[in-house]
Length: 102
Image (tube, rainbow, N blue to C red):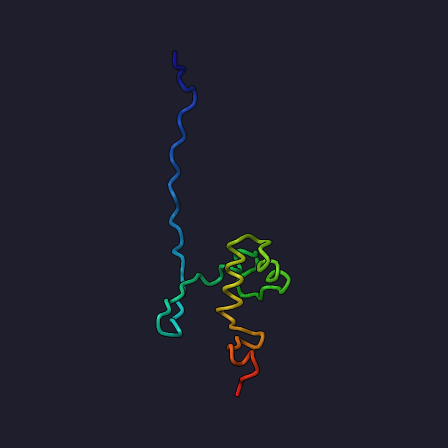
């Protein structure tokens, strides 16, 4: 025999109007490339750094090594490689690495 519930079933909560996510799109630099879309401030939010403040180098290294999770690691790689560019001398071509630069 089935027993009757003594407490009423909780009603479904209504979602509050969420703030729309703002995204930024970078135009492709060359032919055949797709535009890159990302959410500005996402790495700051993942690391717990207030927006407008620089991310400490220690936190950036920890994010790159994956200590803040895979999402933060991907965001840190994106910030390092795409947003700031190559900082350690840049990419070298095959010829330049073999001593054939002009």
